[in-house]
Image 1 (cartoon, helix red, strand yellow):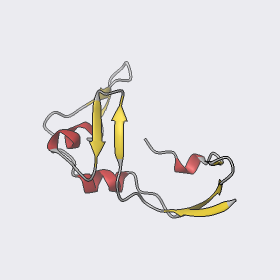
Image 2: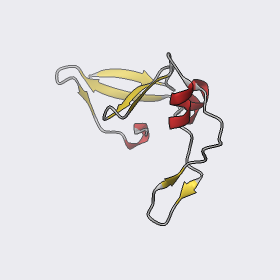
Image 3: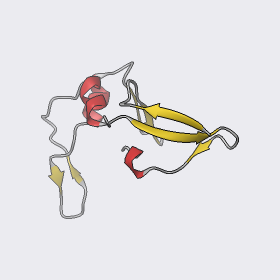
Image 4: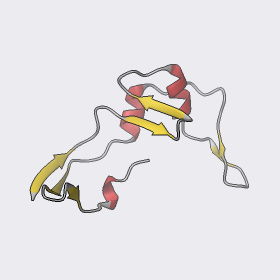
Length: 90
């Protein structure tokens, strides 16, 4: 077992079924529009997006996913670690 300490991410890359991709190291205004939090949800549960909202910066996105320092144990033999609900991010 190996103890690994994680802290807030300094870079995030993300893809959603080839509909969009994000990379905080190569941020664009289009990416910033994708991550704007919804202004609410309609009666069907669909997100309501404010089309006039300013796009988020990469820094705002990183800060929205920040978490406190966390130590986990990694099993080197199986290349896995135990599930930890506190580390799940959107």
